[in-house]
Image (cartoon, rainbow, N blue to C red; front, top):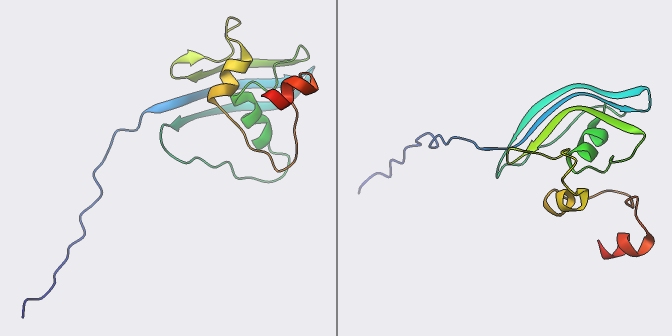
Length: 121
């Protein structure tokens, strides 16, 4: 009888493509800084989790990724590149960003739009 001798070979290494390149030097609400020095690369086709204590900036960082903070009283110093395009370029419509970068919340979280536009979105 032939013995079953299976061997484990290491998974093939693949080059990860960065889909989001986040370089937030400072993000503030008015004069109050909410984020400082958030620099990370998020690879394509991978699950990425933000883990940390309450109030450390996880949700604020996520909101920056899909421009939920596009208000006059907020300011982002740095850039967020999605497929090598700066999401905060003034020529880019935030609604187009949100069509590509979605979020799911534990609690309802409307956009700064009309009720009709929120429901339609």
